Image 1 (cartoon, rainbow, N blue to C red):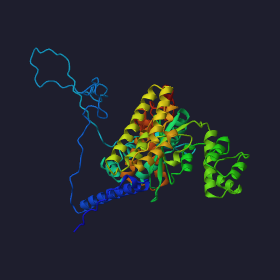
Image 2 (cartoon, rainbow, N blue to C red):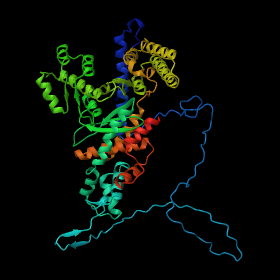
Image 3 (cartoon, helix red, strand yellow):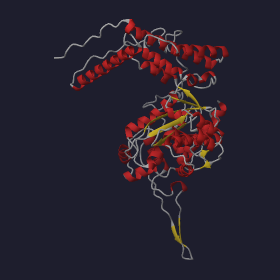
Image 4 (cartoon, helix red, strand yellow):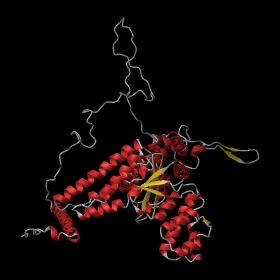
Length: 526
């Protein structure tokens, strides 16, 4: 029989030290964990409890997202449903009986949309001749199908189904066999992972072009297992492009290497590199030595050898010097030290001019577990102030005014220095105050977004692919997944059909220029 839950004794205000407050909050957190485990045990036993679902407030006045000026959704202009359809066949249908003397008035069109899935196999009969000299000459296959047994339209369909529709490889094999294609699983795997150099090259251009035309980027990462080992996929992008790279690490060195993709010189010691090392508190002795050295090294093995030659052997020192040299290489290649990187406050992204996401910053408050009504009120008040500042920042972006910027900074400082009855909340606000520079970067750069939702949305499709198809098993497969995720997302950002893009590249059709040119044109017009 379960014993009754013990009650905490009443604690006088004189005994409510910060330590006591923290211990009480810890007890409340433990009780919440116990309650959740109890619910989980009930589920395992087959017992269920009625969930507590709050009533919807979406249609109430003043609710988030509601529009008080209009109770009904405004309808846009009606579009022609079939006006832009390509007509492949026209059939004229006469009435069954036409009485004598009837007058023809024209036609009423009825457009029926349909699709045909069928194989289209071509036998090429290559004529063979023997010349008077005894040499054999043979007719040549069309250039676009040389070196394979499958047409480019079929290859485009396979790539589209796998990388865009997320059809798994076994189901895709079954699907195209059902359509009448005679193909082995090995050949299907080859089509999905090999002979994709043109696509890989275009993907590499996305990052170089995107960085060259942008003032800021969003970034985030997610898990990406490879060959049975845990790994990570890093996303870099903005409104112009999306770029993905899967690696074994999620360190700052890895992130800087991602930004360096395609660069000829990776490791450079220059003024920017030395400043970075100083900011990260590199040993004064090592820093003084490096200030008088100029280095440009292209490969990681050569760089490690150079570090050994300089006697830089401690892991922390090697890490800071390597990060600084990678920063120096990026600065040397033209990326400005004022270039902004927006992230969710993961430490590996804190380089260049770092800006933080307000949505992630608010989670520090959301994670708190109030112990009593006073704590709950303190949390609600802090959250209200937080979002009030956020909405004022949104207004500031539209009309930057110096006086308003000063007011917002002052209000943010007051919020972060507030002392409430809830000690854990006080500590959370204090930690937020340490990020004031990153959270208020928009006051100096009104073009910066206030959140990192773009990166969250872009990487979601990659996560979906990972959940359906699992981990990658070959280096070529991992590279192909990164490449087509980058190309597909970039096409979507510019309103282009990914199916049309694949056909354009594989069938050598005109109409879709290189994506790097599309990015430059969008940046110039924006």
